[in-house]
Image (cartoon, rainbow, N blue to C red):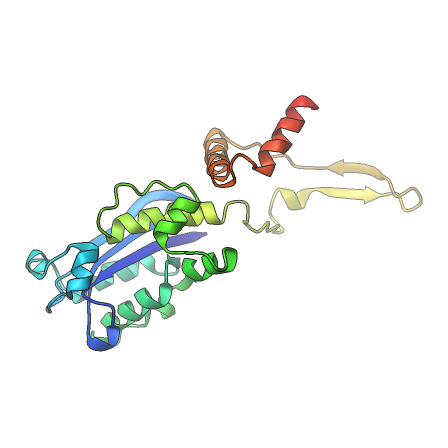
Length: 244
């Protein structure tokens, strides 16, 4: 499963007032693991930047004057995100700006939702934590993600932080899918109709490798911090250690 965590910075909040994207940052997840691949571009917006937006990201029009325009980078962006699931915090905002930039192109570029599916982590957080603050800073605090180096909002930095938040939010919630070719689907049990007992069973056991065990331990550590040491899985591990 390929996912791309995406964030943008803009000249202002209102796409209807012709505000533009000035930074795009993406990081890639493959099977819920960061691959190290990323996409990051600053863009020349060809317009002034609102004072309120400047206070958020600290990017000035003068700093961006020599950067490429969206038309020069969009093909590379589309190649990076195509057929992935986009993970975005407050997705309607970023998608609206991306679609507006695509609509300005003269070659009939498709809308972003024609290229990718989209998961809005803000909507997900509101379902998981109703009535609570669910901005990225609040989620970092809730899931013990270190964002102390985040003085200004930056698209690539925020995408990396959101990737950690998303993985912490969804830890343990992955769906178990058994395909016809999977090891798990090869397990078969033949029951004696009269006794109801298994006469034979063939179960494929696939042990986790070192990297998977380390990732599992990392998620448990995050859950420990978030729950104050009340992680249920830790209790199960302790019980199985004491009573193997």
